[in-house]
Image 1 (cartoon, rainbow, N blue to C red):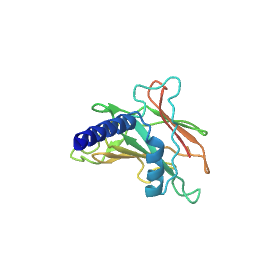
Image 2: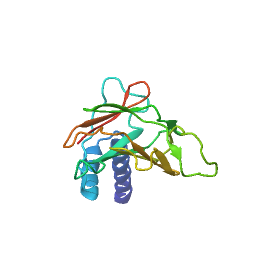
Image 3: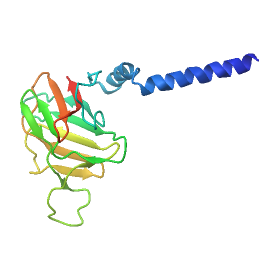
Image 4: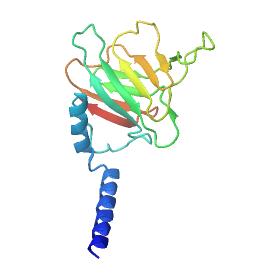
Length: 180
């Protein structure tokens, strides 16, 4: 009898923990462990703004790496986790204190079977990474370098010491916000 009660209590506790995880109650704790593991300090907005995108949190700003000098590129890492299938993010906007910067199409280096193709839109699927750099591309183009990784150069879009980055969809609605 005691074993049956113990199993029932365990099932109820695990079920409650699962639903609390799905509701995002453990997000602050997982951010702490992520900060310890990666060495990056992350600060996500915990509440959704008034009007959000249907893609809200489907693409997350993973981290911001500031360059040690003003001549070295800084990096913002975007990670896609669409709830269903995938979607196009070309034309979305990254907003910082320096202005609004549109995400452009990219040259596909992953499948170079047809040379001189025009740049294509960025269609993201689960786990795709978009690395956004300051400065100008040394290759003269924005690139898809593997099946799931993209490199984009947006010029001088990051303040040097700290700031807030907001990712917005094609309609100007907020997808994610990152304070560094």
